[in-house]
Image (cartoon, rainbow, N blue to C red; front, side):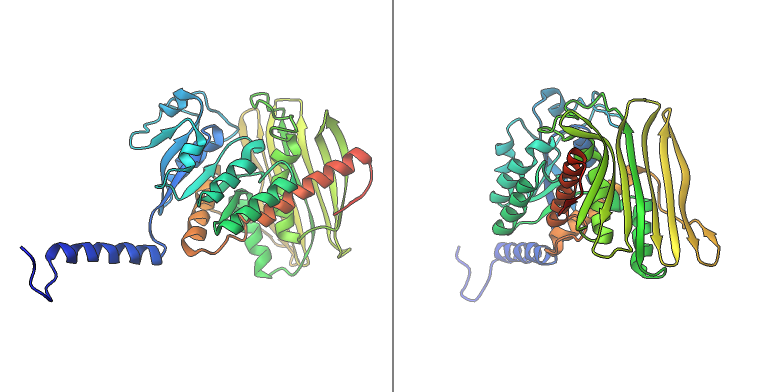
Length: 378
């Protein structure tokens, strides 16, 4: 029976109300962002676990070539921090063996790329062209040309590209950045940064320049990115150290800026003794303070050798209060920033592609300087 003219049926009202509700959530940027993770290795697992603690995003699909991992057997996954892999319940999550099939899934908003760095560029470009936002683990790519291609494709597609440089979200580095940006202690004068690991024998292809890129692009790129974030882009670099085949193994870089007062160095690389699996540290100089931090894993024992400490011009020694020390927490904060950027359509200052491009450029210029023994201009 047809409704009288001027009368709207109850079903039409319900449908209209549903459409209005959906539109409101979309315009307010509050719709759940549906994520497909490409690659279930250590970082893919960390991202998967972190999404479970982030409001506004939900993993709906996984792509992996190891069939047992698609069935939830993650017991063989391991890394140098965080939980060990275990048997996972993947009920309700679509699984793909072919990446293009997942990218074509119309129910996915964001492709999270956790594949080896050599694959980052092509996967990100394909995802952007398919209308997906992309969050890609660091480094953005193995060379600056591919990195720029990723950025340009996302811009042309009207999609957001973000790169997983998690360091600025870790407690000590985030707090140091807050203190610097507050202006409380004046302008930056320089700093020294350190990031060293034992030879990661568990990570296949680590020293392959065409797969992972070695310590320069897998390890030091964290500090290169953070230095670029704090101090801007240097005008030149001078690096000394040693090579292992085609990639830098252990090295120290002096970053040269237009402002000659900025004295910035970084040491990074691999040592061949397994007794110290990891260390990271910084000493940041400002006009009215010095910020100190030193952490290491020695004999499987995590040690805070120097908690974040502020030395000020009144001869005071202060240790600012920090949030949880769990390193996985930083990934949760990073993914919250990803969600914010997509919801608001405002790119992230920290996770932006251009900044990640600069970090990769710095790494390659440092390697060039190490090889030639010369100062290399940017």
